[in-house]
Amino acid sequence: MNVKIFSREATEDLLRQVEKLENTAVISFYDPPSKTFFTEKPIDFGKKVDYLFQVAVNDIDIEVLPRYGLTEKSFFTEAEELAEFIREAKENGMDIICQCEYGQSRSAACAAAILEYYDRKGITVFADYRYYPNQLVFNKIYDALKSENSFGN
Image (cartoon, one colour):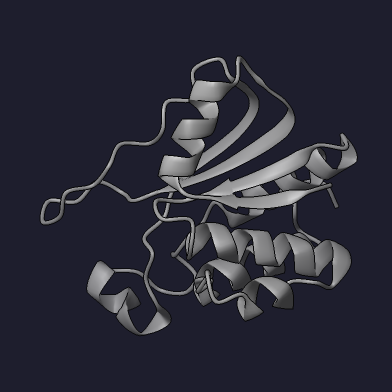
């Protein structure tokens, strides 16, 4: 299983180049709608991807959760569902693309969590200066992958 980190731009470029992403699962993070900030709509993957998980998650740190009306528990409640999606992709021998707006924070955190859980190599993402993985996203996904309560366990 190859795990790759993509930005919106790189993903849209890839989608223009291929008819279909074969044997590839895509995890696509986008910003929730906001009344105060312009937010991009989620990428339209059309029929180019058979296995897709899109989720609106703010790219924020633990210190600012209260400003968004969130707690650690209420932030990224889809993590368990995403963990099951990741497990299924792994079981089906699929590669995984983790994508977010700039390909640096949420997608890097997701990739690091997957790599840490399956190969104990998540540190390679944290050590790469191109990325600054969102620690909340990393921990939510990693904990969900380890969880006995996840759908597949």
